[in-house]
Amino acid sequence: MALFIVESEISRMDERMARLIPKQRAFVEEMFERGVFHMYAVSENLDKWWCSIEADSEEDVHRILEDMPIIDWLNPTINGLMFYNSADQMIPPISLN
Image 1: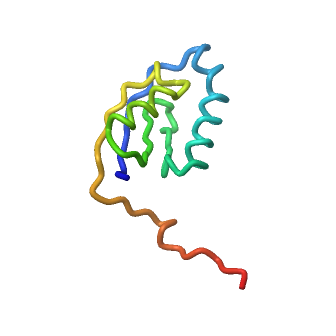
Image 2 (image 1 turned 135 degrees about the vertical axis):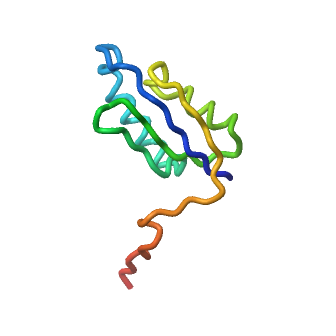
């Protein structure tokens, strides 16, 4: 599997998009639970969006994005990553033994 970073500007939020936010949040949670999303972020101005997606190909990333409830308000750019580091990867899991 490869890792991709996806970014997009977000079109101005309207009432239709606002109604889809709960579905979008549920979709994002499911993607995290399945190990598909590694990171998801929205700017405080609600005008930019980023996520990292683990998938076999860029085409698979497109298929994942097509299922997002708010995809009509995004114009995503997909870039394959050579590597991805984050602070949470540096902290070993706690063992209860």
